[in-house]
Length: 385
Ligand SMILES: Nc1ncnc2c1ncn2[C@@H]1O[C@H](COP(=O)(O)OP(=O)(O)OP(=O)(O)O)[C@@H](O)[C@H]1O
Image 1: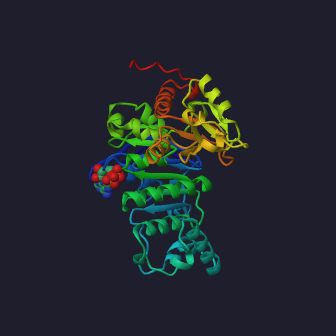
Image 2: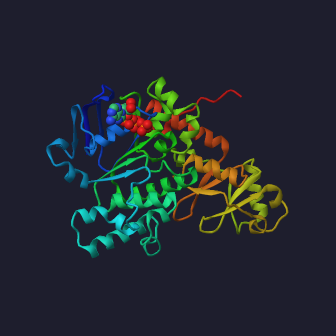
Image 3: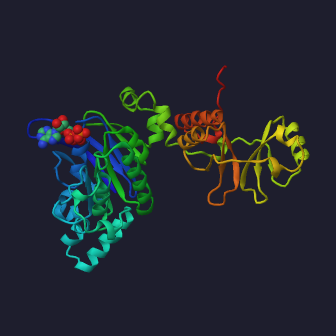
């Protein structure tokens, strides 16, 4: 969809901002450009919508050299979101959002209807916020309007330059979550510049890690974190890359443990016998439809009656596909030694995760990237302990 072929940009004062860049962004892919200040990320992005022209090489969008057409026409097919949003202060939120449709000559009713639809999409009620001016919004709300405005004419490409850079970390994380949800529906081709490695890891299908004007590694986040291409990338992603990886590694069926399972209407003595045979001190409790209810201890079952009389509710659960980081956070939140993993949306119980299983899942995912084999096929050497 977007292809850089040996692109170099040298500024008139002799600064080489990027040199000999070759990479490709697929249709519907979100690529993060990440690296320290001054490494050429913004220059790279601005060459795509011709705010900056390359000194050498060419850039193709949908197979066409971008230098062949009219730059204004080109920009209409590319949403552009920048830090501090660049909203017009004297225009209402609704009019700001409708900027591009206005330039494209859409009739007023159509462009305002589109602006309302987009404000809704980014979580701003148009009847509340539409008539306000940018300085009557919070920083996070302004960024949302920036995203809505960029999407207004439904461009296939989105260019985003530190779009969430000006807000505090909590709002930033919320904006990232909302944007990921939006992107999973819209599937735009996105180039996203950030100097924040966490953001690049969280959002990118692939990340381009920039050194001085060159890409040092171009790969999915799990690979950059698990197998950095060189010392530069390893240094940039940081010594805590194992921790960062937790946030992009999903829970898989093969990570789960299977402690004994009993049902609510089982008799307690039968359940207790089952636990003793399995040499277990507790069991997962399900209802008749195999939906998670909670857990029960052997000691409680030994008092007789039915499982239902002794079972305790379990609040710490997650769906398959949630990340290992969410699993870890849930364990901490409920002060739980394990969490249950269920199918979504059925709620059917699949298994459990303990801190040990979580650690093994992380190690297997690192090995699986390094050796290029599926995670469930990785055999771990045990750590001598
Ligand atoms: N108009 C210009 N004239 C001369 N040099 C420039 C110009 N614009 C950028 N540069 C230089 O080109 C290099 C790359 O700049 P660029 O803005 O692309 O970096 P960046 O990675 O986006 O940095 P930041 O994260 O700080 O925004 C820097 O050394 C910068 O000083």
